[in-house]
Length: 118
Image 1 (cartoon, helix red, strand yellow):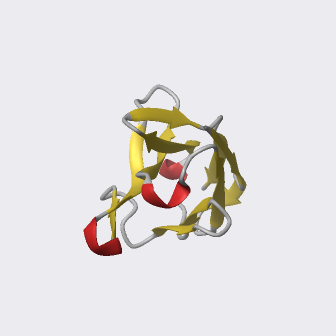
Image 2 (spheres, rainbow, N blue to C red):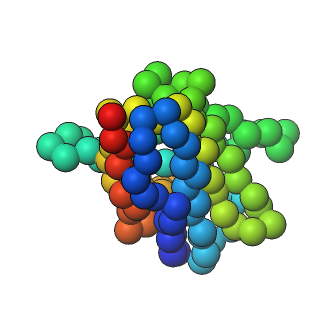
């Protein structure tokens, strides 16, 4: 299993970034995946995630702090997951990690830094 994040960077408050997570080594379309972040001195937290549900649907959930501003999506043909981040705030500054749950084991990417200046 390999997860590679990209798209992080520096942006002013109110700006936007789109993170990508390229996945390989597992069946991308059927495994729960999500985005987490970790700010300096804080615990890693879930930002947004989705999990396949019965009847072919997908369940998504978001941290309260990003609802209405961030959107998680995936392209199964490209084995890639995205996180569109709009209206960024300084408190969104963190290292963002891609996570996949594959047969009960959690896998992480190397992380990508997002810095939002005020």
